[in-house]
Length: 271
Image (cartoon, rainbow, N blue to C red; front, side, top):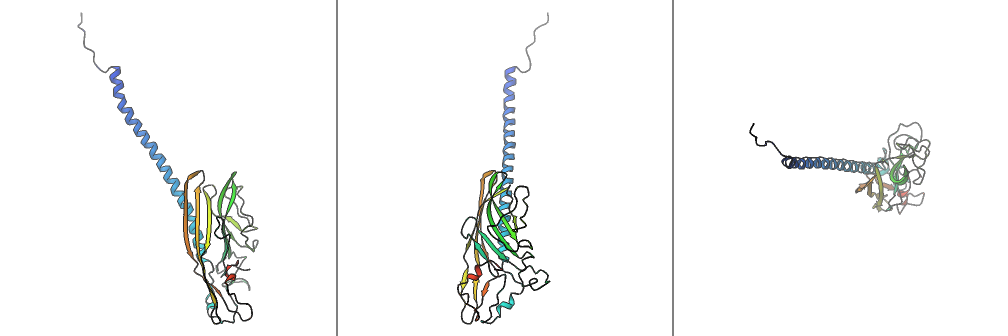
């Protein structure tokens, strides 16, 4: 008769106890990986959202700083007090100032080639795209109301720009420009919801005297706010102060009523 041998190895209880630490470590590792993925996703969303909003604000800032540029600007500085000649690019019109859907109409000289009396350096070439505008509007995109930034540029078909004119076609993506009114999309309505675009005109007017021209030193305070489409927890507001480099000069014209209040500096260019 063979003698009985003592049992060896692990019992069920010991095996289950030994598995528990491994499960705890594995669960912690999985939780860490999932948390890292969520964190990376949040970071990418936040970075893209900030970059998109910043790109829109930078574009508006650069455009308005260039407003009023005239290739032949020096000839207006030395004019006599009786000369009523002014630069066609000098005026800037702000519509709905201090509202959340401001609009601005401006122009600058792009030095298009001269082929007549109305084109070339120093002349406002509307057909050549030298009349421009920026606005915020609310549009229906994919069945939802979204705030969008839009830009306009004049052309042979759009010889004037209206801040309340029809905008781009958002039925397709990307949205297509409205050739009749000149308005095109600037922001991406599937990524960015612009909730505010506000312009505050802090310009300083120096009235003309009997021997000197009047001038308007333009300072525009910009505010742009937005949220990430589909994730309202991502929201941001940006502000920018724009010093328009080209001043608006108004002469003391002997042959007409002088612009003593600077109101002609606040009209749309070309009007």
